Length: 244
Ligand code: AHQ
Image (cartoon, rainbow, N blue to C red):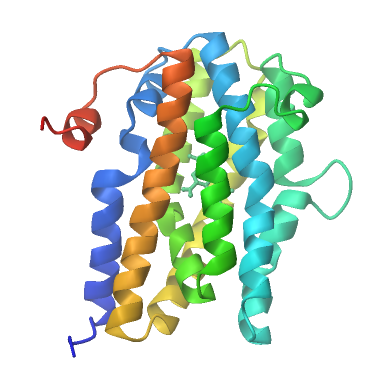
């Protein structure tokens, strides 16, 4: 029976995953943050990421449906309204639609999935199915990519305000809101993971869940880069595609 990790070691194992596999290292994000993407590449990314955004509350509802403990559901449930809003015209999905409009995409362009790429669809569907079928602490652990999101969000905001001035500033509201929401989400998600993944087996599965989620975020960008181009060579890419 392998020894359970203490909290610091468990947290270190989780953080190590993000350091080398989170999608801040992906060539498409590196090119985005360097201001090298064209309007059509930005629009392709916005249209495809919408499918991820609209599925976040679906996967969070799946986690709730698998969790029998009211005190845990009370912590998690705000994520649904963060995206759906309390009423029409509010929330993260609405903010993403406005980002699309600010970039020249119609709401129907996003809701219709007319630009949705197969690789993005299957990566997002894999995430939703993962959260439907895994025990709730493991599905919670897969959300911990958000430990690494605030820095990326901050870098992205600076890049959009500096390089993509053809997008009206109020179209960037989604990223501004995520700065605080991602910090709150990851603080809650980390505490739940460190507390409830309380055997070595569950700790290992939590680390594997985070690696799985990093890979699905990476696969989304691979599909977008393949369809729209726009990547630059990056440290991350060499690291990820070691020569055989
Ligand atoms: O906008 C993002 C978001 O709402 C979420 C929810 C969270 C989860 O529960 O898996 N992950 C996540 C992420 C969002 N944005 C991504 C980005 O790069 O814009 C990052 C992504 C994440 O880090 O998992």
